[in-house]
Length: 240
Image (cartoon, rainbow, N blue to C red):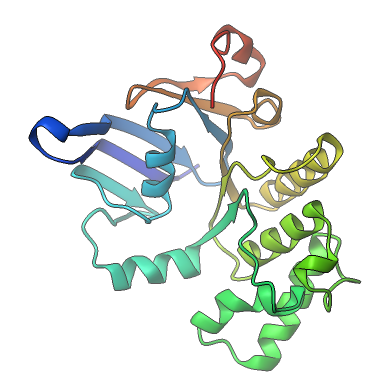
């Protein structure tokens, strides 16, 4: 497998002098195309900063970040926005759906930024909603959908541009146990179709459904290939 995500000595520092905070420090990390992995660690470990870096939402203070073979660490915002729109699908805990739009219209949004024509947008959005089991809810607005259904809409929106990577930030944090399982099943199916899935989570029961865990602490990676079955050995202290 080829590397999709490569951190090479990535450092991220916020503030200056007495207010300096090292969020990431000399981090090396590789995630291959087609992987399904989770990122975990205690509060303040650097996992959220790493997620922002992976998603081209933030840039390192030092080091190289190769995404799909391209060094994106120092790219201008316009080029980063293009990569985010075309190559990365984001799924967040709070869904971030537009309340005045239908499910179909919400899923169309990334394609509007990609200048896809209206007829194709509607066709692709409907197909994406069908994939997540909401083909019969395309005209419902968010307030007419359950939390789990809203997250399915968010997943459909994330996959509609056929991204290389799905980056999920606590995607089950607002869901009950059964709905969590349903959503995780969708991620598994997407991964089996060839999409790389990286999930930031504090829930061991969710991370155990991925294929490996990258464990952060104090801005560094302590374990690159933690077997999800061994999570109990590192989660004696609650994570958040």
